[in-house]
Length: 306
Ligand code: 5AD
Ligand code: SF4
Image (cartoon, rainbow, N blue to C red; front, side, top):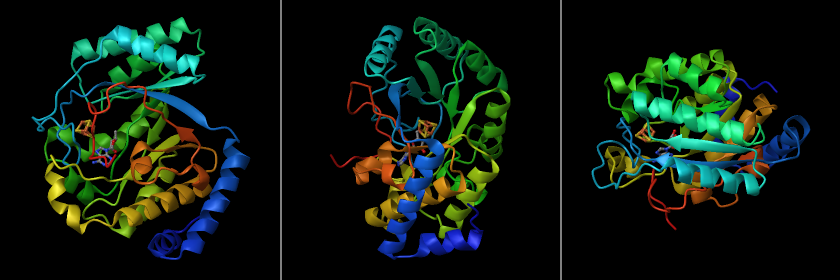
């Protein structure tokens, strides 16, 4: 279904609950019709919280010295993968902070190959390991990984710079071009944004949706921004939309995206379920990523209220 920028802005700005309910109902029907009735489960394994980056919103940013860093041993990754397999999931989502060193790259390559071979293709690997070179993406794809998730976070360049340090490690252009690079390397590629960031406008969110459409992403994960007290962006916690508003915007963004791109995979994100336990499965989402990581506090991107 076609949405103009103006229509998206109007829907996102509306306070009318019945409009949202109607939008969600239409998105839900589109999901059933075009993406299928089933929900896809990806077992999320957060293999390490070491990260070379310093994103201003994220609790495991390099600059947060209070975090206890960990790096899960291979055998634990394989045990958790087996749990995912026994639960009937057909994917594990391997996630970590960003690292680009040679030992990390080859270790991931061999983990991917082991999982892919062990289950004869019945357990597939999705990755969420940040920005890498084209050569690394290719190596990991050749080792057997099928999907890669790398959110743009904010498609507007000015906003991107307000939520990331302005240095070579956080280049907007590299981030923006990564989706095309990942597709070129053969990945089913996902992106997504945070919703309700400080300085973010409704127009920014409308443009995020148009960007995801233009990039022809294969999957998307969008969730509300949730402040983390040990991050620089926390100081702006009082100028962001209320929790209720961020949930409302997330549900409407999800529904519009489903109607715009009926066939893609859309995740109901962990950040959304933190604020809204029902998630977005009734507003167009069709993917859940249950956490398999056993530690509860080791990979805290945002403050939780549990
Ligand atoms: N609130 C919500 N989502 C966050 N992420 C990181 N920090 C936060 C936060 N404070 C999201 C980013 C990243 C994904 C792994 O988690 O979008 O891509
Ligand atoms: Fe690292 Fe990702 Fe957090 Fe940025 S959002 S600091 S890249 S883990």
